[in-house]
Image (spheres, helix red, strand yellow):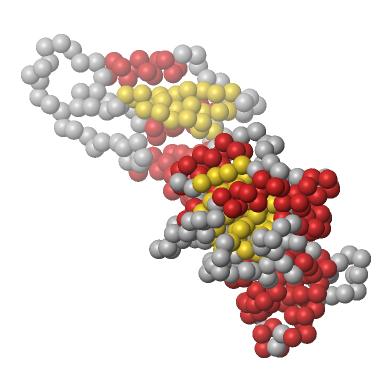
Length: 461
């Protein structure tokens, strides 16, 4: 296959020349306009044809160049022709449609056939609208994939939340089953589901397990069935049971003569600070002021006497120091003008029997002395019981509990009062002197035991 180029004033003329040279088998490869037709010169078109080698005809050399030169000579415009009359314009030839003469109809048909063959060989590019449609479909497909991925993630999140919710329910049921057993040693002893919460609260407060079991048994036997419908009524009933089982002593200062109160107890429970709070309370109680005197037996602890002397001076209260039991009776007689005498003692370990016996010598006389055992609320029940039995030789009349604000639960207080049947008289609820001291009441202790500690002077936060 060889390519040949021919020219003419029109595309049809150029095609005609090519067919004359190579016959009807010449295949038109390309047609282009070399020069547009104007008023002064004809147009020039160039056509490229492909011819098989075996059917090509002898073409004279330089025939194409000769024809181009002839056209150029015809289109030559001599100088000084500017004023020449303009020739009549011929019809224009467009690039899309060729205006052929009648004798050129055969050439037009051949050209159309060649163009159709070229269309089959060269693929037609898609229109712009098709490209836009393709981009739209691609973006739509991409958005659809993104939406499917988001839906999948959302579905997986929902499934994860459902699984987590089911696990939480299982954990709650396991905790409920654990709370329904009173003790591991008696796994067959179960309590009703509605009592599980109140049992857990009471046990975490530090209440002795035996006492708690007794209260639960009593509640199960005596609680009306209508009150078991919800945890609120059960808690209210349980609070009432605790309130009745607590032992508290009202503050009674209607004196029939001199009132002597001795504070005793182990070391570090805050006896001296509690005594200062009581002295301030008695000397300014309500609208009536009692005459208060202080006697201290604590000559062992460094700074104890100075601390108590400072408080006494601030409150304008008399203070006396005693070492021997004989001197104790003499100092009581010295303070005979006082309505209330508060006696501070040195702290002793509950295991130091000798010191406790020495302290016992101060109370063996003709005076009625009210013995208050000061204990810390942070001490566990077993140790509280041990301390009580050791100091019990002094014939304890009441308990004063300190450091309630430092304790997590008050079940140990309840258990000690419940077991010993001794009343609680005062509660120290903070470090402030004299405000952080209050009279013990059943309602306040029951509230603290079930709902946690709060300072009655400041309210619950």
